[in-house]
Image (cartoon, rainbow, N blue to C red; front, side, top):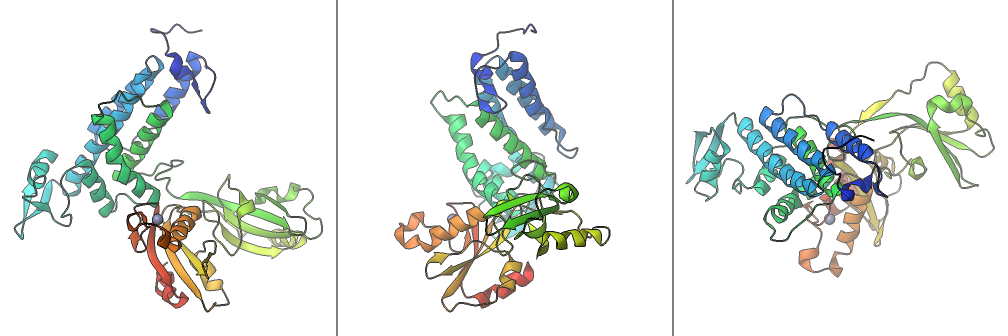
Length: 400
Ligand SMILES: [Zn+2]
């Protein structure tokens, strides 16, 4: 066993690779902490001062091996460095020449530091052009970043709404707050992704800005009479066993790895990463025939998973599962009492939740009602259209 300069904190040793556990060795704990921080490497456009401050945050986090309180300090630092990064991006965005309005007259100031701007807008003597509510606070910097298109996504929007409250309670609370290791890591990882995004970088595998997700061809087989379903990568077709049993219906789809394709339906959106039908339904022998006819025409691609558009049909108070635009186009029959909700969300589940809340809105007090037009304060969804006939979907489908 290695000699450590100080005694490891027993509290830290109870966090293993899968969360709270019986105590792991100090060596394994140190390796995990280093791996978590080592994965956070900024792109080269991120300013050096942000990188160096984040480097010191990592050191604080690693010191959590010896003092559990270090995780709390590291989480506070993550909030502070996010604000630093937003201020620097703000100045870079305007090339240090910030357009302001005073008594209706536009003019430009040369700002050498963010304080030059904040001192003018905080008391509302001046306003930033295009951002009349901007007051220099963390909350307004986050709103500015979203309005300028640096930030997007519905989960991110809700996280942005609560971030300044979380920061304030962590920074200014009179209580002796202690952050749990996973909570500190979540904040640090999230703010790392946001800072990366400010300079145009995705974080593959991250939950905020994963960037385009690769998809490859998969086979999905169902035996409806038996209630059985199977799925595997198309390269496994030559060695697949039992697929020639009678009654099997097969599709070839584009899907991301590690998805539960038992949920997939050709006429609905049900998966966390969009799945695209390529071929089917057909029998196993028809599928083999397709593959034997020459080099596969089914190639992989990439797909965005943030800010998807879902179309949800409501008939007589019953709420159908979400559809994509192409699913709506493929619908044959129009029901006389159907209405539609078009929702921007990151996953089908959040879109449905929002529509359930809208349809049952009469059961709620007005302040708790979900928003039927625009971004919702209560959930990670944005209403694009609410309660409209199918004919009203044409424009939005054309633009999709
Ligand atoms: Zn909502």
